[in-house]
Amino acid sequence: MNRLKMKYRKLGNTDIDVSVICLGTMTFGEQNSQKDGFDQMDYAVERGVNFFDTAELYAVKPRKETYGKTEEIVGNWFQEKKNRDKIILASKIASKSDGLEWIREGAKTLGFDKKNMNAAIDKSLKRLNTDYIDLYQLHWPERKVPKFGILDFEYDASDNDWTTVEEVLYNLDQLVKAGKIRYAGLSNETPWGVMKYMKLSEEKNLPRMMSIQNVYSLVNRVFDIHNSEVSIRENCGLLAYSPLAGGRLSGKYVGGKNPKKARYTLWPRRFSRHHTARGENAIEKYVNLANKHGIPPSTFANAFVNDRPFVTSNIIGATTMEQLKENIDSIDITLNDDILKEIEDIHLYDPNPCV
Image 1 (cartoon, rainbow, N blue to C red):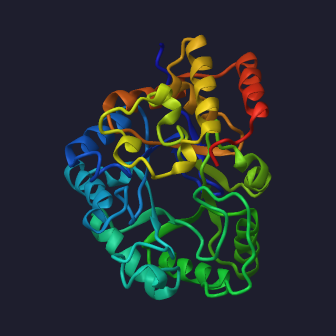
Image 2: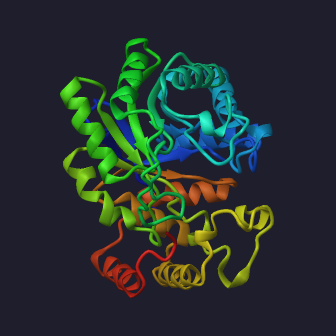
């Protein structure tokens, strides 16, 4: 394969060019050691990647012992390499949850109010060995929304204990003015949420949301239906996460295989939406299609995501250097119309089997 140069796209309405491939880091500190993380970051930069994504919540699987560990590893790398100005750094603040009792004052008290936001950003900056974050994202909404395997919105009249959108934007504005963040973004958000933030940012002259980080892959294209038009027309591009459906589109689990140290081997019940009978059937079809065209399945699945018209950057993740190389190699692949037609045929037979 002839290696092409990395491609770059503007981040929302900013003047920042981010690589189409973004290095996801959530395995650093759990499945990957600090040395592994350093090797991955070194290689990604060598291949032209200038965009890293992390979160205060990481490493994953979230637990008290590894809380903040990923940011620490990224920060240690910055300290050693002295190259903070070369990387567009994205991180995220955690929101309300049924777990996460170890973050600040506990799961139910988390949110985007001024107290939480100030505490979260200061600790992230310290762990990351930096005085600013380029893109600060709201990891998931405080309000009840379809996310993490839930497709339908279920209205709950009692769900009104969340920081107002205007207050969240004001709090972010204070962080911008303090020089702690440059821009803000959303994650796991709905069309209503995106448009509410856009409307109030314009009306109140408050920070505009420059991106939305939602799940997107061959087996979960719900974003096509829910958010794609908003993303394009509002110039709030998708930072696609889980483009391999937790590694399943690599084909390594096909046929009931359980690779040693792989995510679903370690935590078989986590992200159960990825291992349904429907999902396994569709994944096997996509893996076979990739093999038919002589493209590694991981490279194939990432190439599909890379070229979607609403995608700003594709957040890849890896636990081995071989995986990382295959993922980044997707920048060299453009799927032709015939292949895209074959993909569409599989998709239309059973749409979104891994929601």
